[in-house]
Image (cartoon, rainbow, N blue to C red; front, side):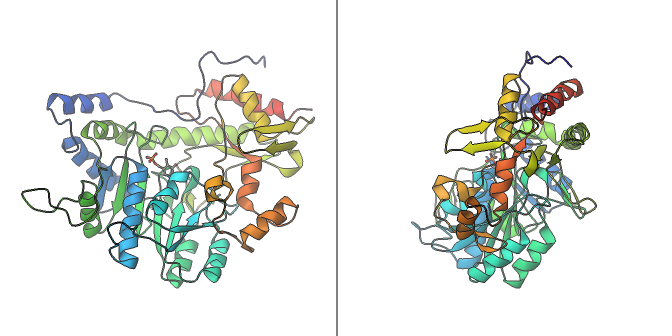
Length: 423
Ligand SMILES: *Cc1c(COP(=O)(O)O)cnc(C)c1O
């Protein structure tokens, strides 16, 4: 196959509109509901609750805002109402998935928590139950766990839930990337004590921005509604007893989400076809796709990723801002593949860099299946113990998973990646 750069860039993940989005946005405009109240918001909350199978939803300005509200609810339930100038989790330790996007963890930090990062397992690339067990040995006082379903693949929820129950800990579920994915037949976003999804522009369906808090508890939903509209009390004037936020979703944005909701299943089917096409195209290469447990979970296949086998890795060194590698026949590395894709006008991305490796969280505790990961990390660098998140970051990458990508384009991309492994 003769390879030449694409004229039009192939992206990692972009929105796909279907027409109704514009109709609902226009409706909001024509009826002058250009606000954070209106029919689109009501409908979106209803549609999402029906789809996910939960009793209550609150449409918010982002997934991050939804997680922030979840953190506040958990904090108040565990430790009571905070002082006005203090976070809800002030001075308390919280366990959090380590290999994730920063928005999973930041809201707990807004609320004053000290985060302990929990290492990743290899079966789903999510929180390792064995590492979580170790963390409770080291920090038995912890009462809150923040769990992500990375790239649309559900975490090992039952194992994690059992450990949390043993220690009386609550779970916040970050389903920002996994809307529509199921675990043992249940929708992600309805598993946790508190759950959040996102409608950011790159997610499985989008409002251009936006997010949602999901719950079966009416009281929690009411609280989130109140907090997200500046915590107004039921008085004729602006009356405030607690801190508030301007976190509600706009009725215009809600029009976009409303138009997307009926296409969620179609998007998932499309993403699954992309994943399977890569799987087939790479089946004789020394790589594996981002894994899931068949029969137990059905991902939404939001991003297709690959992991290069150790023996097929050429040398790669990453600094804080840039990366170097030494090309070797028959071997490659994420940096070489990403640079090659870029040459052909294709966007890939490194695996989300684990939080314990981020400069901002470098002094936070990190726990692996073997115990304190800070000691382990140094041993790993010396060639010893397991730091699974670091290993997946070193050997993995996110492949272009755009639902606007054609099968023909994907075949070319597969060929480009295959070339990187050639002698
Ligand atoms: C996108 C994302 C979020 C945040 O959602 P926003 O709507 O962008 O605020 C949180 N967690 C994860 C894992 C995400 O991918």
